[in-house]
Length: 296
Image (cartoon, rainbow, N blue to C red; front, top):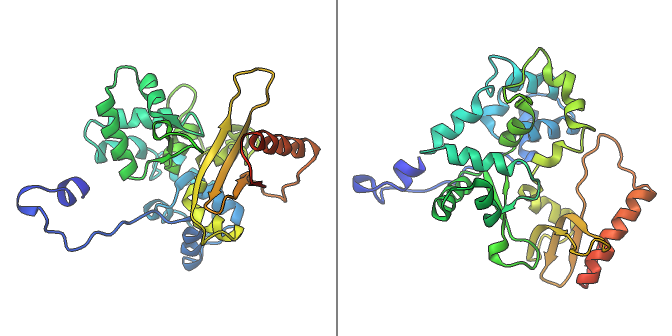
């Protein structure tokens, strides 16, 4: 569509009446979609499902009423005849010419939550030219597979590219077995989901992009009307005796206030114990040593 129609040359050039950016459903739209279909899932199960399938209606229509999220994931992703069993390779090959590089970049991005800089990607890719990488990254961003974030108070060249497509992350993290083949087995995800995640709710959110829901987060914080820059933040000191820190989300407001947000996923009320409280204080102290006007 984009290549052959929107960017068409010759007789089809400039013949478009209107362009519509059709984005995947947000989490809340998925919730409404299932309500309208009378599919009953708890919030916890909806999040688990969203982190596996994203907001793609073509994938979500496969979820049947009466099935848990784990059953749906088994049926769609791990069953031999599941809709998404072979989807990953087919998807990229169908969308992109010379899709091997696209897949390679996505595979690299799936290994680190906070993303890679352009120079880091060039290093990991080895012999790929900078021009080819730029074109490929632009295509992946246009199609919603990859997103770019500007680190807090860093230059444009330090921008981070991260994997934004939930299904691609799920495929690479959990559908591929250690031997490189597709994982399979009856009720595979239902039997292995806790083991594969270590502690369920810690590893799964690696694929859940909070940046897709920034409008909602800002509304809940009461800063929806304020101009903001949003990014993750990490400080890695060169001195081994100095403390480092990492924050899941910084909301840098135009009114010189910064919200530091920690993102957690739990099926019970999350309790801040003494150990975690100390960790939070450390994050705040490290950040505050470099910045002012910080609120947590």
